[in-house]
Amino acid sequence: MKPFREISASQLSSLSLPDEMKAWGYLLIRNVLPVEDITRMLEEITRIVSASGWLLSDRSPAERVSDARAACGDPDPAFKRVYEQIFNLQAFHAFAHHSALRQVMHLLVGQDLLVHPKPIGRLIFPNCDRLVIHAHQDHRSLDGDAESFTAWMPLHDCPVEVGPLQIMEGSHVYGLQGVDPTTGIIAKETARGGEWAGGPIYAGDVLIFHSLTVHAATPNTSTQLRISMDCRFQDARRAVNPANFVFPGSGNDKSWEAIYAGWPSEELKYFWKTMPLLFEPSRATLAKLADTEAEPKLRARYARILDQLEAQGLS
Ligand SMILES: O=C(O)CCC(=O)C(=O)O
Image 1 (cartoon, protein in one colour):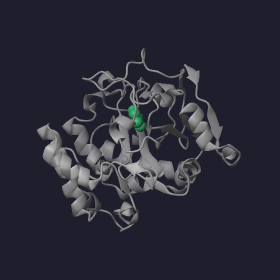
Image 2 (image 1 turned 135 degrees about the vertical axis):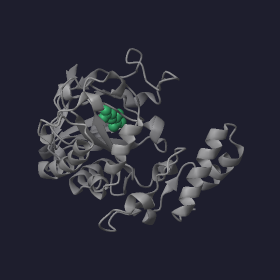
Image 3 (image 1 turned 90 degrees about the vertical axis):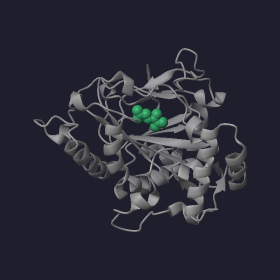
Image 4 (image 1 turned 45 degrees about the horizontal axis):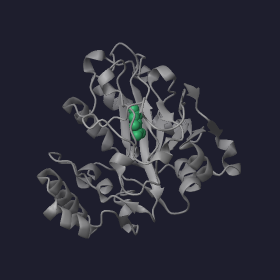
């Protein structure tokens, strides 16, 4: 695999990030985030996974050596119980708003930056094929405007054996690509784009890619849990799917109120409410779909989105 094309933080003032993104579909920027801030986040997450029995008890939690008997991943109930504790942390949400990350995202999307409110934490057990995330495009789940971007950040050094992301260069110019209808995976053999690029990604580096860029995880063949975060961003004036501000899945009782209940301060609670967001689908379209969509499951999903927008005062 060819090595990532990389940019150093010191080159940021002399490069046009929009041009680089347009040409390659991704940017690997080294040394963006202060390692102390990343380590603080890592320690909070490690405390939770260690207390949940995911790490070998005869090794230091800082080594993140996983206990294979605990191996699990989304959507396993055991995984969700632990992940919920992490998702409830105020620091986890604040990470997506880190000033160093915002600065880079401003260079890419301009002054009107929307930080999507649901960052994702990846807790990837080693040597577990079923937990490897295969080739896909984020636009399929994000929806809204395709000019949206994911920032992927390991919370520790991530050599190739610990399973960093790989990127298919230039794959963002081909629109949504075909997937296997049962797995949602894009076959690497038929994916359209240039060569796959990969390599180690270190604590402090940020891999940013376009929502149409095809990407996949490298299998984690180490002994360690891989802990990373991915956060999404876009120009706030462009359309955004309202599903990104609520919890539209069936059978979950997640709510912002429950998440915020344990936060030590008011900071960042419902930060998007003061922004003039352009929802696509609009509330009127959602209301129509909640009535007319042929599939009952989808009708119920649209109704849940509308209810939750209303509860936030966004309708
Ligand atoms: O971290 C991973 O394993 C997958 C991340 C990913 O696919 C994404 O950030 O879109």
